[in-house]
Every structure is written in structure tokens, then in C-alpha cells.
Image (cartoon, rainbow, N blue to C red; front, side, top):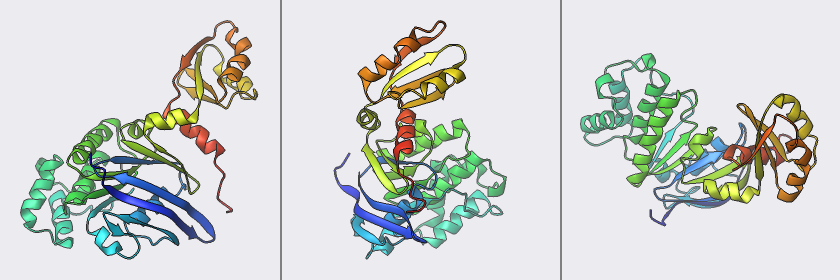
Length: 309
């Protein structure tokens, strides 16, 4: 993987209606990386992505994308970026092939027929090429949208919650495509709410209420949290959770199926606080590695809300 920065920005800020949606954002993304954006709804992920690809002009800040200034050379950036929106935005009354041919015309793609055929083959769409887009399932629409993004050979893909509402098998296939693209040198910036998808990214950035809270690999993000976690199973976990949440040394109690994850940032204090709970008959306590979900729930709980900022 090259050390060339495809995205290198700092101090990006954007305000809408007096509310600072993105606040002093900075990030560096290397060529061929899959970089995951995580954060709650309304955290500023989509606004940030649009500033990075030249669709929105930041109120302040600076940086480059694909070697071009994000403010003065946004038109040059757009030509080299594939942007996949949250909602399917192609024509449902056109076939798969017709949609791709239309997009290829918009981008003035050379050898259009050949390029469309390659896109169909790359995403496994050839046999369905005559099917109307409106008749496709969510997973097939997702493939079509990705094929459309790739028609003009972009160097950077910006994917805004691309797998929302798609079944697990289709999500897995989609991510296999993404990793193949990254291996070919395409850089991918993707926002997601799914923790299993976050773990597939090379690096992560967590945004809450317009602020970048942390960036790093999944392992680095978990280590930085300094969380110590125990998993507990047994009877009346709902009642146990209510008791545990009142203990000062316990930072977080989260249900995970038939267990609870009980976490704290001070390991000795947590161990002492759990002493008499671990002696309770019928409960089984096991040390556990904190998950990305544990870490991000804690980050969201601690982040200041910018609704009235």
C-alpha cells in the first residue's frame, strides 16, 4: 500500500442554520485504503463526505483530495470520484444495461459499449442486464449502483451507508467487491452503522455531533478506549443490569444476546465493584475483550450534543 495521501484535510467546518454540523475536522487517507466513517445519525458523516469530494464548500479549513485543492479545484476532484448515495438514485423504469449506458454517456466514457459490458461483468450483472432496475432486490440495486460508480474509472469511491437495508449475504458480497477494488489501488471512504463492516476497514474514524473523536485501526481504537469488559450470563439479567448501572465504577452495561457486557475504564476499581455481584448464585462472569460496539457506545454517551451549538 502506497504512502501517497489521497485525502489530506484539516480544520474543515460547516454550519447550517446556525448549527455547526462539522467542527474542525481533519483526516488523512492513503491510497488503496478502505477508510470507515462511523457515528450516529446526524453526526456529520454525509456532510463531511460531500465536502471531501467537492459537492459542498467548507466554511473554513483546507486540504487536498486526489492531489487537488478541495475548494479551488473541486471540479477536477469530481471527475475522479465515484459517489454512492444512501438511497438508490438510478432510473427504475430503465434496465440495468440502459442505466449504465446512460451514466456512461453523462461521463463521456470512451468505448461506451465495452465499458458498460465490463461493468456488468465485474459486478455479476450480465445475465440480468435486461431486467428493469425497479424490479431488483436491495442487494442487486446495490450492485448496479456500484457498477455505475465505477464506469468512469474513479480513483476514489465515497460510499454513504451503501448497505443499509440489504441482507447479510448481499452485504458480504458487496464487501468482497470493495476489497478487490482496494487491492487494485482504488481508495474507498465508506460510512456505516454496522460494526462487522467497520472491522473490515483498514482504518476507522468515529464522528459524533460534528467532532472527530478518534481515528485508527480497529485494534488501536479499542486499545485507546482503555475499557475493561466482563461478560455475564445468568437469571434476571434485566434486573442485574439496572443494579449494575448504579455502580460508579461501571461505565457501561450493554445487553448482548443472552449476556451482558459490563465495562469500566479503571480495571482495579471495576474488579472491586463487581466482587459481590460475581458471588451471586447462578451468574457466570467471564473476562471479555471490549468490542468496537462497546467502544462506540461509550464514545457516543460521552460526546457533547451540538443540537443547540
